[in-house]
Length: 304
Image (tube, rainbow, N blue to C red; front, top):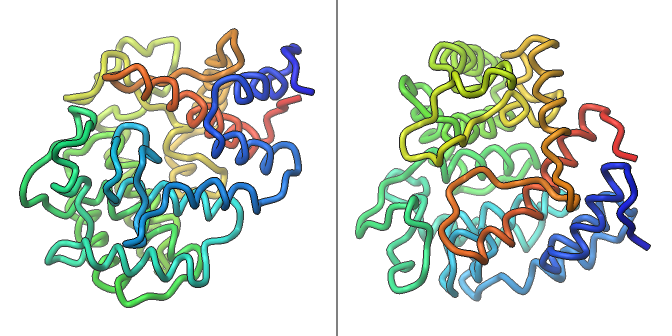
């Protein structure tokens, strides 16, 4: 039985059972309680549409029944986490991605089908949305890492390379998308060169808080919420990420210390992006909590 004991994992477990959607409860049980992956996939299926995409607020900041690339990226990350990013399920997703791609063969962040349904005001809704690295990079990197081969990937990969190579002025979420692509793409030599350049960009533009004690001295990107900073662990989510090379051991340890200390009294971690509706905040915290636990565990931090 989950309790409110002192160790981080027990406190997080109590928080998950108290507040999370069924999907996040199943994911927690699979990852931290040796649960079976089947219930995770069953819970995820409830969000799938007939067109092969996903919807129904799987990504909490987009509400309503219409499939969107951001929902579908979320679904792929769930399948990846349970080792099921393969077969017919992913073939259907790739067909959907191909159907909704722009003329460049890549993905917009938000399709105009969202009009009429609630969505976060910071996700722009336009009639002819452009392809974006933010939407395309994480999907392409994940599919490559899982050795998925589909015709859609060829042009989408080319788009991501061009977008990464063109980055000069950027913002943290775009950098996260870029490193997600680079961590999975097969051309490792080119990926390492690109990641080295991005690391210099991140440090030069102060896109990562290297000393949490001096957090207020770091800029917040335009359009972000007050205090919506990124830290080394947000880019280097695992020790194997190319972004790990951007930071010294001391900088990363301070970042992980800060992440561990962010656990709240109720056992969950807070969201730091702009909140626009009560339900999105409630659904977002379990997702952030799972991510924090995964990051801390990947670096060998004791959870309990």
